[in-house]
Length: 281
Ligand SMILES: C[S@@+](CC[C@H](N)C(=O)[O-])C[C@H]1O[C@@H](n2cnc3c(N)ncnc32)[C@H](O)[C@@H]1O
Image 1 (cartoon, rainbow, N blue to C red):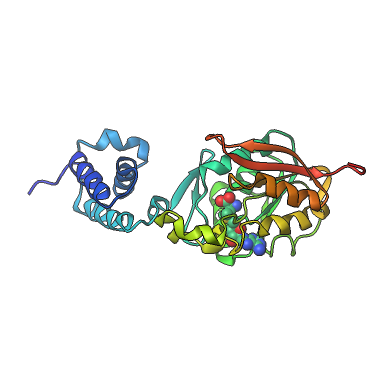
Image 2: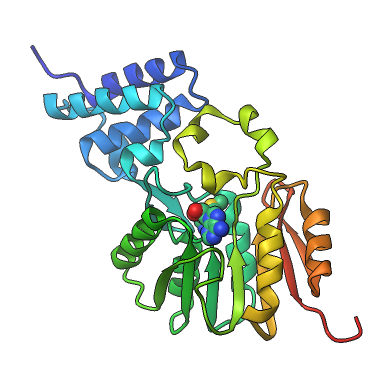
């Protein structure tokens, strides 16, 4: 029997994922076929006319089973692209999201030398900032030891020497001050969790929700930030699209002045930028 070509397997994969109700079956099928063929996704079109080995066909079948059960593509292939680099991801960390690139853009819009990333997860924010600004250094904290292991692996893979990672409840185990404090904390309210996409069941619950009103991390960060920022230092936090006003109010109560609310590419409020308020303001 002749082996099926990549094109034939791709058509079958798209049909399988469509039948399973996967939202973008064409995109996911292409990514999973490239993974099964152990080639870069950009080379897929080139090799589609060629026959596929039984081993690669078996890898594709296993990957399709997992995706049909709603496991995220990034977990199946083990990598997720963020700001032009591939990050290792697993069930222990939040998948880096495109929305978080809004925070990266805001952070890179002004100089910094020393960054504190609270709730670092895969390390995608801290490592991106340090790699894009050679000569800078920073600390990433997380309350999850398995998440920190993934962040350290990403630092090694990407050759980032300036990052250190600390097991810590927000900044509790951190010393010193930083000219940039960033965070993408868990901001989904407990009440919203049941309505979320099924793929999110594969991500750590503690990375998604605070188990309360979705704002408790901002209260903790607001308490911590004044003692962690150097004079003139910036605080940048990612928020859910409806949270800008509440987060700014929490910050104001802790002596932090909101200087900007930045939208994401879909024009939804996504980042609050604050600094320590000048005396008398
Ligand atoms: C939304 S995820 C963000 C991960 C990563 N920074 C990103 O943007 O993809 C939130 C992270 O905060 C961590 N976290 C939750 N509560 C924490 C706490 N009390 N102290 C430190 N980190 C915490 C979670 O473990 C998770 O890794």
